[in-house]
Image 1 (spheres, rainbow, N blue to C red):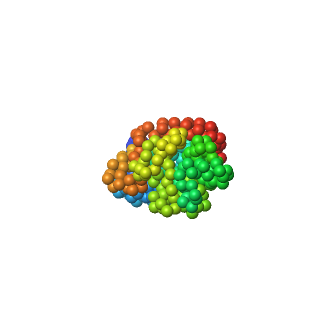
Image 2 (cartoon, rainbow, N blue to C red):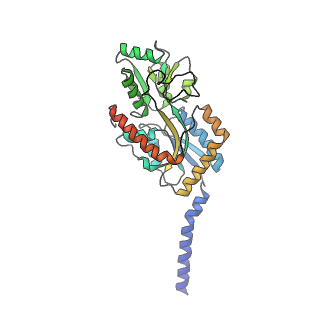
Length: 323
């Protein structure tokens, strides 16, 4: 009898242990989540993150905390999520820099395979902005000034050798002018440097808030999209202006560690699908001037691998080495 009782107790314990993960998955989320954004407050990514946090919180019935972790070539926040528990309670909001940093930095601290996308929030082209404090106010005038004053121009960017650096290098090659890159922690600071006249020009994303509310301090000169943007219909594309090689865009996505249990990932995917379908979220995206993402969520991992291969090839061609 003692032996039988021991066997039954062991079997009962095993059944409880086997049932525990399933119960935990069903209960998810049982406590607040956090979304890490690797830019400081004031950037469009911060505004987008806070909107997502509010709307996702309504769907899952939990508080969503936004945590800003800027710096380190924008990888500090990414590394923080990579090193967090694989339980689905820490989510990363990232842009295309998630891909470009794998090449741009010698030690990014992560690989693309470390993250799984749970939602693609939208996409964005880049806008060439010029400070109103200078005599050149068009792309052609900027090019003419750069050629007449070699070495005088400077350009603000974020992320060191990321996408903005590659676009800038394409622009150097296409226009034949040179300038000095000045790196900032976030897009707001990079744009403010142009507004103040400390920097001549920059290439923020199309929805950067400061570029839409400072027409007296900034000139919006060209966009890197294939066609004119819905949100900036008066701004021509680089292609229209005779520079077809200057075409690029970034995207906004939510990711978790790939080691997060599948049921939890599926729950987050379904919750975010509900969020993205809502009229409220779509209205917020239009307010932020973020274009709809073109593509399917399941294709994102393969897309990122292609982007990495293309970025690496272009960066090497332009002489950009990992830092």
